[in-house]
Amino acid sequence: MTDGGATAGVQGVSAPSEDAVRRLLAPYFPDAPEGPRLVPVGEGGEHSAWWVGEHHVLRSAPDTAATGRQRREIALRSAVAARLPVAVPRSAAAGEWAPGLGWTLDVRLPGVSAERAPVGADGERDLAGLLAGLRAFPVAEAAALGVPSAPARALPPLWRQVERAAGQVPVDPEALRRDAERTGAAGEREVPTVLLHADLKGEHLLTGRGRVTGVLDWTDAVLGDPAEDIAGLIQSVGAPAALRVAEQAGYGRALAARALHLVRCDTVVRLAERLRGEDDSPLPLLRAQRARAWEPTVFDGPSEG
Image 1 (cartoon, helix red, strand yellow):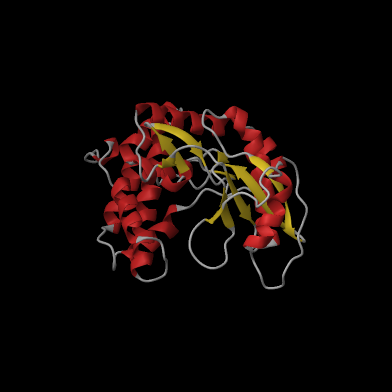
Image 2 (cartoon, one colour; image 1 turned 60 degrees about the vertical axis):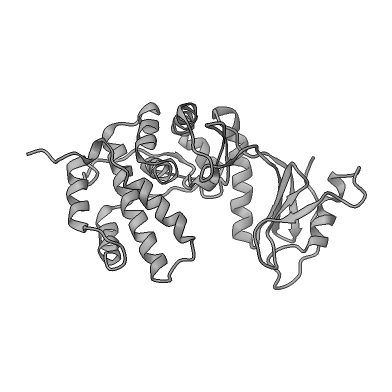
């Protein structure tokens, strides 16, 4: 399959209609006169993503900025596919659904969300290979593909958010600060810059029989602090498992401690925002992510001295 043509854009419409999607797909499914079966992804009246038959998903970009991110994602996935031990989606066709607005027809990967099926020891090795492969990917090559850079987060602003969150979520901000100092997460040391997926939520990790069968949604990839990807795994597979993964990937204790501290703060802040009505994420998911982040680890022993 190759690039498809554009359809006429409709002012004020941020996604193609079902009829427009069928016109986009017609050249790629010549053996299906009525086209493949289409099922919208998610709810609502206007859909930017459609399941296409049993083996594909079509995603459309709503604006030019999203189109740029989508094109960068397609290029990055192609570049990392052969260098990672886990599968990434492949674009079978791409084009414009309206002038300047892109779409991609991705091949679906097997598996279910890690939120529904946990990883086992083999899956942890898969994730370690993922982190190691991203760490080894040349930063200059990623930058040439248009992957942006993101500075490592400073902790004091995050602590101030945690202090505000204390009104909605039980937490001791001073205990978090002491934990950060004890583990080294608050140190002034420089963190490395590597290629990050930057959104390793459970919904983006596909699993099957304890293995990781694929990693979805590379739109937010950046060059930045590897603690962010470790933090993502902590909220997805639990703190002890994610710290084992980080160690297998070659990351040291200080960086793992930084990741743990970041995600513990983040999960408290996000849950509080949801309780204040500032976020619409599912409450059970946010509570589950917070619980995983606060699972006991080797960093939770008594402080020294």
